[in-house]
Amino acid sequence: MMSIKQKAIALGVIVVMNTVVFFLFGLLAIISFVASAPLAFAILKR
Image (tube, rainbow, N blue to C red):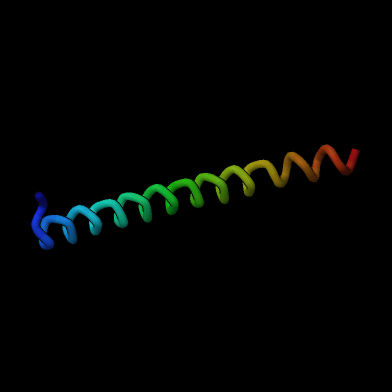
């Protein structure tokens, strides 16, 4: 059995990892959107 302190630490690590993953995916999504926006405008202007 894990103690309450160990459970709290494990939960904290999981929350931090999830936050980092969501932040990185969000950053990648924003970068890809910004990068593709000029390309989309160029295609639409033709």
